[in-house]
Image (tube, rainbow, N blue to C red; front, side):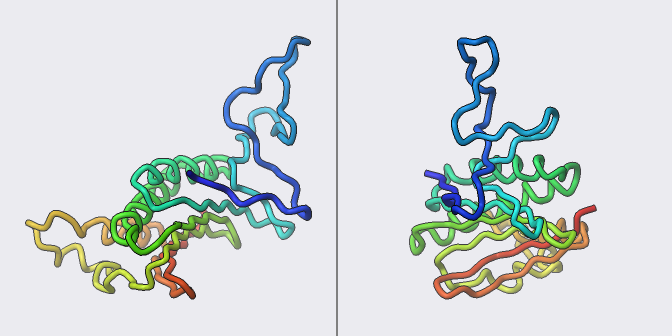
Amino acid sequence: MLTAPAATSAMPDTSAVPGPAPASTSGTPATPPGTRTPPSGTPATPPGARVTPSGTRVAHWTTPPTAACVPLIRTRVGSALAAWGISGELRDTLLLTVAELVGNAVRHTAAVTERLHVTVAVVGGRVRLEVEDGDPTPPPAELTALTALAEIDPEAESGRGLPIVALLVAEACGRLSVHAREFGKAVRVCVPVA
């Protein structure tokens, strides 16, 4: 089950229910309680997303590390990026990146972690995407190096995803980094908004 953090009393719930509003008997569309309808032509804010008082756009989701969470997280991140006006190659790079990072976390850490935490934010003219798991073991340094793709055994069945992500992120003038956490690690990608 994919969950978004509960809204705090200081920050009103700005999540919109995806899909069309149910029809009411009065002939005008009904708006479910607690739902804000965005101005016409503006994408709805996805569940888990909000804008902080300082103007930072942020979305956060927590999910068990299962294969089913990969497309769900990819869809949620895509919805957040669309709502924030991020499209084109940058959006494609970020969607490929989140699918790879979440997929890696599921594949390599599911046995030692109960939850994955995924955050995407736009702050200071940059998009920050972070996938946190409960395994403190970082990916091997050589896998995050841009030169690693040339060093992969052509007969290997895996090991190409993270180097490809590193190349795409570098092409977008961004960076890929790994950060230790108290109970695990976070793999973070930061790229400038074009």
